[in-house]
Image 1 (cartoon, chains in turn blue, green):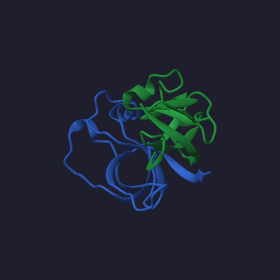
Image 2 (cartoon, chains in turn red, cyan; image 1 turned 90 degrees about the vertical axis):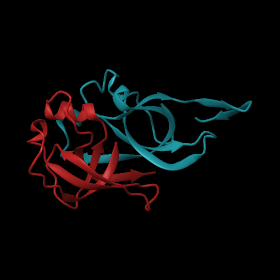
Image 3 (tube, rainbow over the protein chains, first blue to last red; image 1 turned 60 degrees about the vertical axis):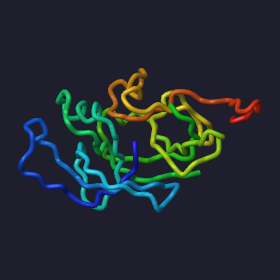
Length: 89
Length: 95
């Protein structure tokens, strides 16, 4: 799982049937150990977050299908929590 | 499976229901000589580790094969704590 900031929404009108109800967000990963790192992902949003929020993403296909209750869903990453605080010791 | 050191934890709100009872730790991935690298991963603690422990974590669908994580949409879990490592005939105390 990775930490990421939501930087936008992806709007798509033509999709395959299976993912017609999924909300898609654009996120940029952050690395608490190296601030220069960051990759852009499109992820499915399971909890409903807004732009600018810090979230936890799970990068696994079966995780997405268990959240959406759809077997063999053709998506791979999902927002699973909103991050309130990062504690580094 | 990879080696990592527990360097922090994560406070989350508004999460997927199955994620409520678990602890999320920030792991700093270790290189092959047990030195810390720049990479990190967030993993679910299944065995009760503490900050600064060296652990083994598992990624991918194998992360959901433990008793605790079978219903959790995770892609990384801590599966073991490491006490010492042996490399080039040198014993490294990782406790």
